[in-house]
Image (cartoon, rainbow, N blue to C red; front, side):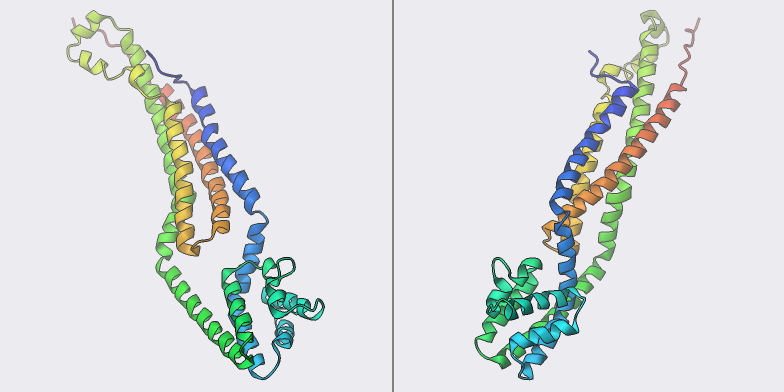
Length: 309
């Protein structure tokens, strides 16, 4: 029996299955991270500047300025930056709302940490709050030590990114270009081969048993071109298309883990962005390749040679 349609229409329609699967993931992850990614980027800027802010804050407190006033002084110096905005929120909570230092930072409704969700900042602020119970000099030394620690962590992170840059670049190139391009070409060539086999199978099927016998060993050769034993092009495309979607997600998760560590927000956003690029490129290359190779396959003319006399 013949399995499935082998025509061009079924093959082109099957392209929309992996595309639809990818669009589902894209919409889901994009809606989940559309607002969060903006907050995450602001938080990243804050983390990069925060070591300097801690150093200034520690020096101010070491000079004998109370912690509550020190926040206002450093916020004025870093006005217009994410760090300045964070310190300004703490200062507003302290001055205008009369909160304690702990409440100004960690209050469940108006705490400054709510607007800049970062484990790095949260941890350093917890150290500040606990140190404040033991005196201003302990606070100053703790903040300066944390500032130096952050700088060293950043140096190590930059060094690791430099060492792994080649691997990350290779993975990103596979996601955005190599995998969809190769997969699209493979599907196009596969459709051409299936079409040629179909035409040869029909041609040989029209030969009589006597003709096949008189050609000698060609009878064994004819058995190769049984279209019912060939996988339909649309099934092959479905396998390759779903593979492209899967490999894009897997490589994106791995690349994000190497580059950013455990960052689920950036991971989901990267998946939506990379899926859009890879599946769009795959769809275009696959469609163009199918049309070109299918046209070439139709140029094949099977010539029936008369049996030898």
